[in-house]
Image (cartoon, rainbow, N blue to C red):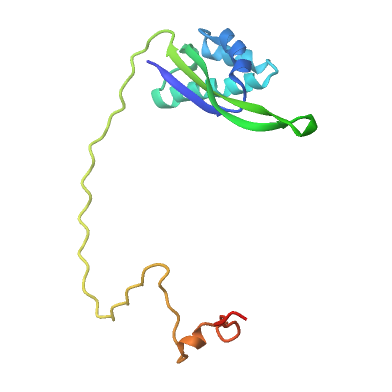
Length: 175
């Protein structure tokens, strides 16, 4: 059984992550995380998060043991590139490419175990609800759609409801 986890658009160049990823391929997953714990680099933190996520996917979704997992595939692909300016002398500029990476980890079992499918219980019939009895109370008015609630008129004309209509009148001629 293959279990996978991905991290997309990680803000680090794939060129910096690949050397460490090459070391971890085909290691047991738990040993890879232990190795990354003592490696002082940002790439170690990123790879550790993805591997731990894959381990948790296996444990939570498939009830597999942590000790029985190994890294089958570990790929580091190029992601999108953010383009920025790098200002240089005499008013010039160069392109600054901020690269991202996509990390993908696929774990497999060292010793295959038989996976038990979760038992799906058939949906139970809902109990019949009692029908509503017509009440003698007055029917409540239906609410108007959102945004169409109107305030009472209070006997004012259209110009009076406008608010600032008397103060700021539009110009009718070019002066």
